[in-house]
Image (cartoon, rainbow, N blue to C red; front, side):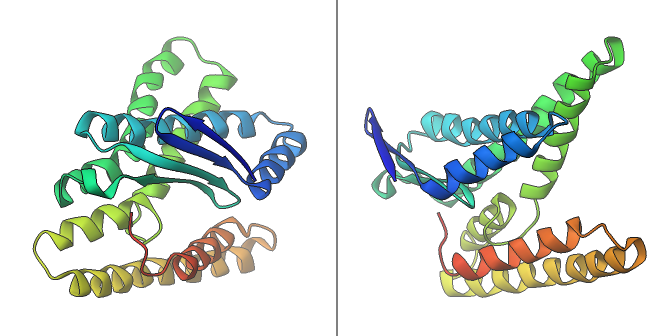
Amino acid sequence: MIGLRIGGCRLEFHFGFAAAAAFLLLADRSGIGIAGAAAAILHELGHLLCMKWLGVPAVRIKCGIFGLEILEEKRACKGYLADVCIALAGPCANAAAFFLLLPIQWLFPSELVSRLLGVNAVLAAFHLLPVEPLDGGQALYAALCRRLPVSTAERLTSAISFLTLLPLGILGFLVLLRSHYNFTLLLVSGYLMLMMLLKRGRYY
């Protein structure tokens, strides 16, 4: 692990993150990997800018094999509504990029802009899913906590996450059976289930 300190924030790069990034960039011949990396950086900048705007500083940014995790200063928390805004800021940044790039693609079609449109749309939609480890699940949990006890919000978020992943997993299995090679949706469902298990009970 390599750690850097930028101001009051510690930036950590774990070996798994570096290995996964290197493999993606070396194995990718279509350019999707570069576009995906740009969309991911924009996504995290959306979170960080919203945190800065709300006065909730980040104390640690962890780059691991499962992506980036931003840890905020709990003492600076502005409440559950702020948590909802911070969670949704990442997908909103990707959605904004998509709508800004759309007219450019219409007027000046290019393969690069097309890739950026696709990855930003997918990343925004993916993270808006109401599943615990994703931004949509974090926003759902924070929104429920505004009206319900924390324990009830946790149980409801877990139940909604499972009810979201179950049909996705079944659909992914059916797609694999029909196509004999397309396992993407099944793999994503399994990844999210693994993330739920690894992050169980951890919110923000």
